[in-house]
Image 1 (cartoon, rainbow, N blue to C red):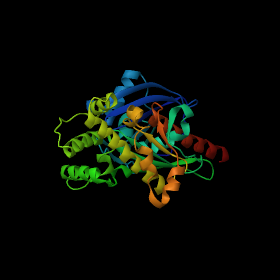
Image 2: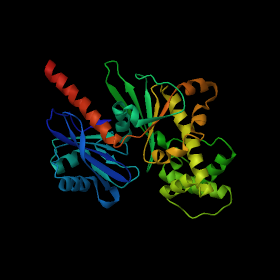
Image 3: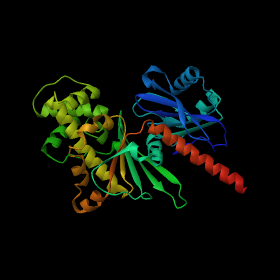
Image 4: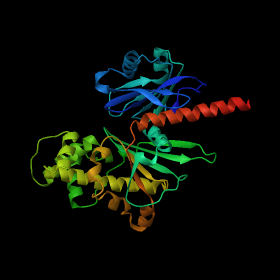
Length: 338
């Protein structure tokens, strides 16, 4: 979690954005009501850098760029930002100067996803399996998209919330049965000896699973995009696609359960990203929850922790807006007590 400066009190509107490896989503937020409008999505590949995309948003939406807060899919702990799954890189202060911004906040995308959890209502989260959440307990959030993002959210003694960004998606993937060891061997040859969770639990990860499972069954298949694999699995017309999605959910359950144990996330484990919501019809009957709870001596703890799929639109932008809102509230409180 990092900002380029102390955020001043500002009136009117700000621009918020959720920058992923594939798309950059921009919106305007009302700083009194915190309602989003002027939402526009730009393919990252269409722009040389973030500055060009921000200028395009300003021109196409006729929205001034003064106060900007963005969530981005990479570590955001210094002035130098380098995206993990895209070529964009920039200086926070350099971008602020180049665009003449009055303030510019940069937040890791899963720190923003964690912040979004406090904005969700019951209709925007679908519970998977059992468990009961404790609202003030730590929460975990993960999301499969272009990559695999991970974050946590903790509640502070004063009632504020603090996101804990991380790079848990790049932890090692652990196979648990014969077929998974075969998948691991296939992928370890492809990725020079190391298989991270992201190589399995992401859009490209689903593509990897499709190829690895086809090889396991000695059935050559053409490379397919994740969108096509998902559609074939949902229709039931492709047995390898069905098995790939089933394997995806089994491994996702194991990974999510590991996150739950890591920080005792009795506040729940929340799943976002672009992949899972599209495959939701197959999740309930998958091994996801069984693998989530399959934690040996700590299965009782895992069983007590609930899981939710985030179905809200633009959760990342809402999260970075919530972070901005909390910063502004702190600033106002300091001014009142000064």
